[in-house]
Amino acid sequence: MATILIVDDESDILFLLRMTLETAGYSVLEAENGAVAIEQMTQTRPDLIITDLMMPVMDGRELIGRIRSSPDLSTLPIILVSANPNGTVGAHAIMRKPFRQEDLINNVRTLLGEAS
Image 1 (cartoon, one colour):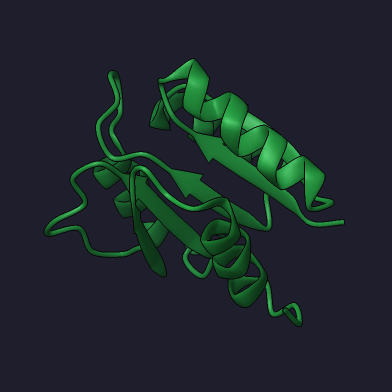
Image 2 (cartoon, one colour):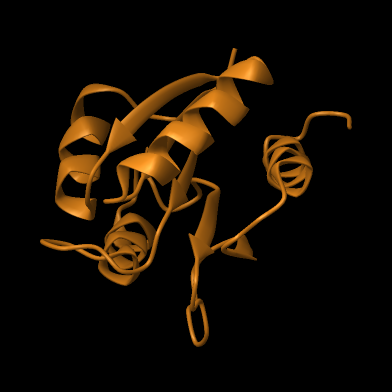
């Protein structure tokens, strides 16, 4: 079972993502900002990250930059889910909020190399 780290400061979005991913059979970790996500990745390396862009402490742009500059994490698949994702680089997939749950799962499966 793949482990997915979701990073968002909105509890409603965290809940929706968790329920969607767990229903599809994934293990889920949560972080309320990029700094917490980085800390969690020192304990458990996720198979994929889903992150928001606008968050306090460390936003999604800085989180993606740190992941991409880390030799151990640079190839980690990332899905950016944001209301305004324009001009963001480094994510493998970008989804605009609100998103369709089926589209999210399809992106996750594609990035994890799973058959749809």
